[in-house]
Each structure stands twice: as C-alpha cells, then as structure tokens.
Image (tube, rainbow, N blue to C red):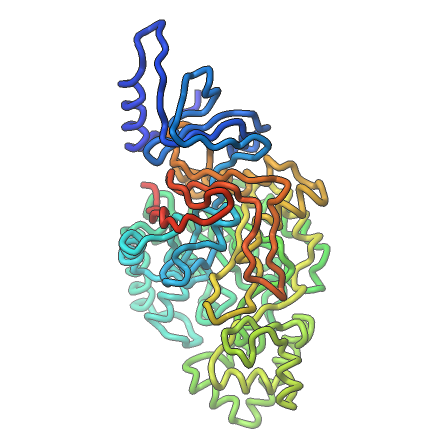
Length: 533
C-alpha cells in the first residue's frame, strides 16, 4: 500500500469529518461550502476521467463521489454537466509580475486555469525570499506563488557584469545568498546561462552553488541552459543540454530544463535528440525533467540577441565605449550580422518593448525608418537602454509536438505580465495552456486530454513535491478548474496579444472563487508556497 503525505490542514479536516460521522448504520446529511456536480473529473493522475461530484469546505476538497448517495448538500451548487473538472494548473516556468500592482491579480493566468506559478527563474530570482513571500501575503496575489533564487542575481550582486571566474571569496559570498534563500523557503537555484552575467560562469561555479542548495531537502535546479541552438559562437544545443544534466547529476539535485526545445532552422526536426538526451540521463538515474510552451517564438531582450557576450561585459558605459571605437564597433557589427542570420533575419526580431516608437515593429522596420543597417540600429537602441524583443519562428512546431509526448514534459507559459503601456507582448502570457490543449488534443489528436491535463497539474505537483496540490483528492487544497472543452481556446495573437483565453467557467484558488461563470471575481486568493521540508 502506498504511503500518503498528510499535512496539518488535512489532519484537521479529517478530524472534522470524523466528528460529524453518524453512528454505525445511520446516515447524516453533510453540508459543504460549495458543491460541483455532474462534471467529467480528470484528477491529474493521467487516468481516465469519471463523472463525480466534488465538495469544497474551508478551502479544501472535502468530498469526491456521488453527492446524492452520500447525502451531501450545499448552499452553493455548481452544475458542471458537460464540463471538465480538473486540478488547478501549475505554470512551471513563469514571469508573472505578482510583485507589481498591475500584475498581482494574475488575470492572464487565471483565465487559462492556472492557479500556481513558479517564479525567480532564468537566474533572476532575488535571495530575499522571505521578504518576497511576506509581501505576497501582505498585498495579496491572484495565484499561488513558488520562488527560486537566481544565479544571475547573486553574480550581479557579488561580481557585477564582469567576464571572469569568481574568486574563492566571491564564490563563498554567493553560497551565502543560496543558504539565505533556501532557509527562507526557496525551492532551489535557477540559472540563465544564456544571459549576462550567468554566461560568464563556469560549469564548476554553478555546480558548487547547486551543491550548496542540495544541503536543503527537496531542492531543485532549474536551468535556462547555455545554448538552445541559436547562440553565436556557442557550445551548441547538444553540449548545452549535457552541461545541464551534468550540473543536476553532480549536485544531486532534481533538475528541470526551462522551455525545453531546440532553436534555429538548423535544428528543425531534431527533437528526437532532445528527447534522447534526457531519457538516457533518466535511465541512468538522473532526476531530470522539463517544461514547454507551444509557441514558435521566443521573448527575450535585444542585447542578448544582437550583441556578443564579450561586448556586453561590464557597465553600459563600457559597452557604449566599444560602440564608439571604430575598430571594435566593426567587430560587433560583424557579430550582430551573424547573430541575426542564425535567428532568421532582422524581420524576425519583433519589439515587445513599452516604448511606442518600438512596440510592434520589427528590427528591420526600425532600421528602415532610421536609414541604418539592422546592426547599426541595434547599437543605436542599446545606447539608450536594452529592449524587449521576440524572435519569431525560432522553434519548430514538429519538435514541440514530439517533445510534448514525453512523460516528463510539464507545461509553462514562460510569460511575463505586460505593463499597461505595452500593447504588443508575447501571446504566450495569455494563451499557452489552451493553445497546447487545442493543438495536441482537439486539432491534431496527438494526445489524450488526461495526458495533457496531467502535464498541466499532477506532473508538476510530483516534480515540485507539493503535498496537497496538483490532484483532485479529498483533503487537498481546493485549486479547481471547471472548463468547457468546446470553448477552451487561446484568443491571443501576435497582433492582438492581450486577449484572455476563453472556456474557464469556474475557477477556485484555495477554495475561493476566482472566476465565476466565466468572469473574474477580483479575489486575491493565492498564497506563497514554501519549499516542502
């Protein structure tokens, strides 16, 4: 018989239910706060669904079964006939702006059925985890939040943007950041080895910091690996994945590859390589997983896509001085031209930056307006500040669909809540989960709905070892989705990205109604989730 983790909240609930139990041979009516009846229940396990009723009491799932037979009643009954009832979805790689007033309601995520987001990724997470979680508790958040500490954050704090190895004293100072964050509830260490300053770090530096995180129970290594395939003079996709596996294996952590896929036209059709690398590692005992979104475009920043790492080292003033040196500037322009060729050309770099003179235009558009070359235009923009950009058609849909079939592949948005003055942004923030469902279940009939729903929920709960989320089980937190399979669709496009997904009829976060009859209630029902100990 499998053992079951029971949290204090579950113990209290079971005691309450036991106290209400009738004497042997008798039945008694039980009233729950909310009763969802007649829905087709997908419990997050990947098993076939069944028609069941679900009761919610005091923020938790208090009943699953036949409510009539069990004499369960409620003042709040939701008729889910013809609808699917699932666990709340977990966004395994997110940039939801829960710390900002414009993003704490998390509406782009709630309307997809997402009830938990994982943050602090790509190496950006602060080590002040305690302060961040306390802020979420004080100010309220629309979804549950999980936080990582970022290697890039701590390297910037200790070394700056210098292109060199850390000294022993600097490495020890970074270890201190890791310890502080883990003690305060971080789930683990994240890296953005593609980005400055993370790209300047050696593999051994990252392993040393990951080993520090491994001193804490249930710690995780999350990586935006060094080269997804479109890096100028990079190590290449295969070697980059092997580095991420090595860090995971030698540190003893569980590992996850962020937005796992292959970039660049030269990698179209090579998803079997990506799958084999992870499956071979798992076969030899490495606890390695991944997450994906279904879009062919990325979102990052102009500097990372158009300026070689050596030219970005140090301060912005040092970078501009290189632009002002004719000989160095010529080298940078040559490198930029090569980088743009790898990425499909200047017309594939689309600005999602808040600046109105850039937003919605391609790099080719802005270059034509300025009567400059794309490489010169990149330098002109970067003299002012970095810019948010998308790289269109960098991923191959056939690669994505092959990787979607793997049992270790979770789902993510990789989406950042846009600022109010940012009309064009990546549509994945608003539509990644329904888009994956629509592509692979409804249109291509590649995957069963229970498999995709598991990739949205129970699979991530297993990876993050969440003891009471990701599944529909009695005693679990009542993060529950009621969706209409006929209307569950992404509406966001690259031209009109800020459109909420449709089809979420009811959504509960910790038992509170966040979406009622298809409309947001405005509830800030999310809670910070600390690493399970």
